[in-house]
Length: 357
Image (cartoon, rainbow, N blue to C red; front, side):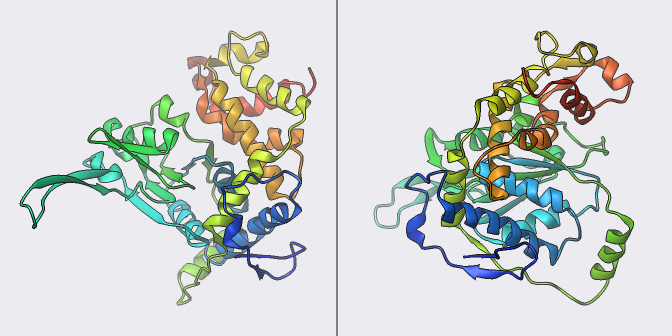
């Protein structure tokens, strides 16, 4: 079930998709029905989210990009910008299991992944261990304020995010697809926070930054949230539809010149690489790994599918470069002294790296 329409201005309507179209069979890139489903999904989800969250249209599209590309997203912004509300609302638009963990300094790894308990069988009196799954065993996991918990607990998510499984008591427990971690992080508070290590940041497909709303949007936010109305959110996507879209994204064809441009962009973040522009070399300490190239291409494929296109363009790559690469590079001390963070460096990179070799 997905709400959508033939044009973006038309009202939403319901489109049923049979459960037989689940993820088991590959979806060809020229599957017009799946492509239309993807385009309508973007419009329908955005319409539902807009009932509760004002503005942030670009953020919603980036989160959908991460979901349909099969990756995770880190939402960064100061308190009060509706990061948690938006993620929770997004989860409500889909018929998926939703889990939430409020990260705190005393949170234990087992509070996230689950724990083994010793139970006694009534019939035999034998004692056996039984695994109790934690909130990570969900389709969408909201890791709220992930940088408030120590590295030991942060690392509990590493295996789940990368391998889609949890190991406990020597036994592996597979996470059901789709599995998406949507984490939030406050960039301004330093007391009682633990910055995410580079290895964990690299597991996030996208880093999504929340900016302050415009004046008109803030007026509407205050008007809505100080009244009596409580908008309801209707699910518009099933699990089978999400899996089908993820398969379609993988099948989107990619021209060689687009692939080469994406790889050149990532290699240009490495200060020792010949492709790194001379003005940026003193500003970069470490660059992105091949995983950055993989994520950039997957995100670009998802963006193309979300807009109903069967091919990836250079604009898809450029528009997602900042969200995909900025959190994977380490600025040098000189860059920090000049007030240049990862986002500003990638913006310069996109300007300096030519689209053609």
